[in-house]
Length: 213
Image (tube, one colour):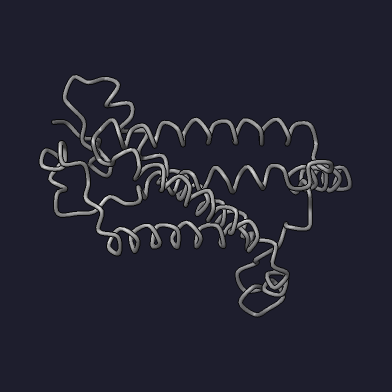
């Protein structure tokens, strides 16, 4: 058996497909780090909410595993040394499905007010996340970490929680945080009201540069 350098996802030595799928199983971690860096760099409150939602999503998956106590596949659990842990639902699949659904809804939100560039980039992100979700789900079954039903349930839960997170992001109470002492100290901001914030920010900086010249 061989394993990935990060998070130790096992695959059979010499199995190139297994190696690819083992690394695909790490994609949920990449997404969490992406949104955490987005929150740190842009100080957008909604990015922080998404990071918290990722953590809660993982907590729900772990809670269900211990509550349902559904065993992992018996054919592979001994080889992976996971017979003492539970597999329902697949938390990796749930996490990537959560991200896919959330990004899909964010992409469709305010569609009419977005530039062509933003639409194309957003579409590529959604398609990429869809492929990532399929790869992650496939890897959990192929590598023997989960059964098909555990992966399906994880995917459905992730989609449902992603839709709920999108609803929470629309809560108007977030608008009050930037004006608080905590918000002003950390320079927090809200971009939810802007349909295409990156496009608008770029235009603002171009105008600022022209005025400076």
